[in-house]
Amino acid sequence: MTSLRAAVSAALVAFLVLCGPWLSAQSPTDLAGVWTINRQLSQFPKEVGFSASFLPTEPAGGDRAGQRRGVQSETQEGASRVRFLTDEVRLPPDRLTIDVTPALVTITPDPGAPRTVQPGRRDQEVKIGPITAITNASWEASRLTIAYDAGGGRVIRYAYSAGQSPTALIVDVEFIDGRGVGDRVRRVYEKAPTASPPSTSAAPRDVAPPPTTFPASSPAASAPIDQRPDAALKGLNRLGVVVEGLGADAAKCGLKQEALEAAVTKRLMDAGFRVVRDSDDDTYLYVNINTVTASAALCVSRYDVTLYSHATAQLTHTAATVLVQVELLHKGGLTGGAPGVHADGVLKSVLEYVDQFSTRVRDANK
Image (cartoon, rainbow, N blue to C red; front, side, top):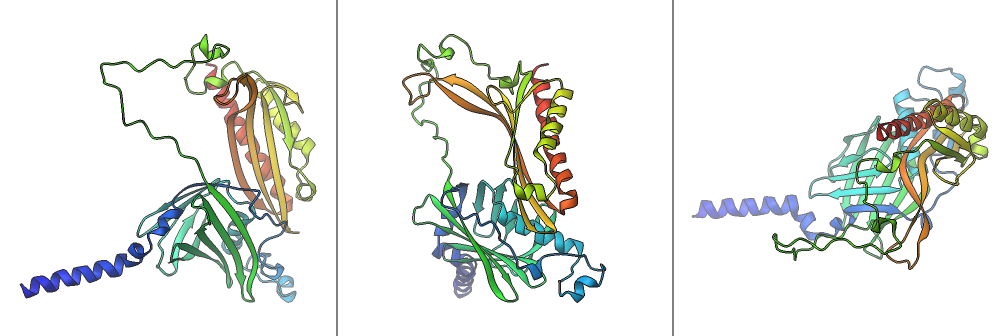
């Protein structure tokens, strides 16, 4: 009996040691869920990152002039890691999905690469898209801190915490180097609405549910709904093209609106579409590119390609039929590189999305 009590006591102590922090602070689960960025409440500084002396320049083995000027050299892998981690801060994801368990936290940005950290574990190697970073994560009550080691004494530290409202998520980011904390930026996310759960008071199986009714003025009242995949793309053979977002920084990085419009238009015409440039009257392809220059040697662009159309509909909250904009397809991404090659990389990615859209439209019309 004594040995049994000792075994039970030992098991209880072990359980409390391993799970005590989780049990004493169940509020970390408040961070779990899907979050969308609130751009009005978030900060978007024009310049954010490590100081100039810490920006990657020549890879190790490059000329000695950079070393004489006091600019830090590093490997190509290290330079890529710094760029990737810094780009994530400059162009934050529109959507975050956070999964929390007693042992692990998985954060999936959209767009972006997912990462899984183990709070309490020191120097954890984490694969994030094309890079691998050493991370140190920890819980401080309901606050989750993740420090990414960018190399060369540089750290990018994230702090995730619940806002004053349970539907708000605060993400604070700090750039830390040998001189202490540098740039700081705060982003605010809001809980994404969830679909209503199915009713638990289901009708008896031998009783058919009442048919769906539509307003008499609605086209759905007289026509069946085509629910086949990509049905909204069927019959599409004419598109407008609108390109926006290219500013002074984009020009410095070699991106030119006329060249981009011409390339997109040609690709669509080659796919068999009739193209109307600078038109958003009906269904059109919208290309938006936002570019920032981190330095004279680094360009970062966020690019989005969206296929929009218009339709008339009577919404549940409107008394009359209204004109609405409909998003049919969307793709977006993030890239960074030297000014000499940056424009080619952005154009290649945009045209890949255009090709994917063309394929889906072609498949829908088979």
